[in-house]
Length: 163
Image (cartoon, rainbow, N blue to C red; front, side):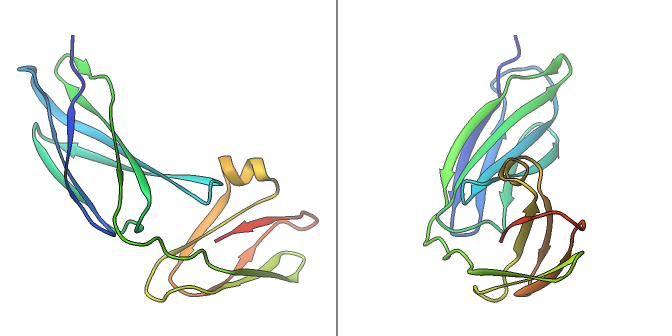
């Protein structure tokens, strides 16, 4: 039986997490697949996937959000097949930034001007959909470092927006 990998949190800060991966077996490991999950505003779960080559690994994931819970899951790719999943949870330090205040205004039937308040020099995600279910499961999205963006939409639809 292939055991799951051991995920050890080495350190964490306001915007990064460092962790190590190892296997407690003599089975040859060719690499790991790591998923990092987090949720914004209970509407949208985000995921970042890392493909890591080699047997032992220390990874640092940066550009994270302060005071946000993250789930790290990993499995090992071995000569005998894939291992079961391992999970760890970590809460980044610091104070979570305030939610931006969003204003959305239709420019015409296919364009919406979105603008918001918030800190400079960060990346904002704009999520939009025609229903709450779609906003949670599979919204349209884009990112920007500015505080406004014109979003192109389908005519004759009502949209929900989240920044």
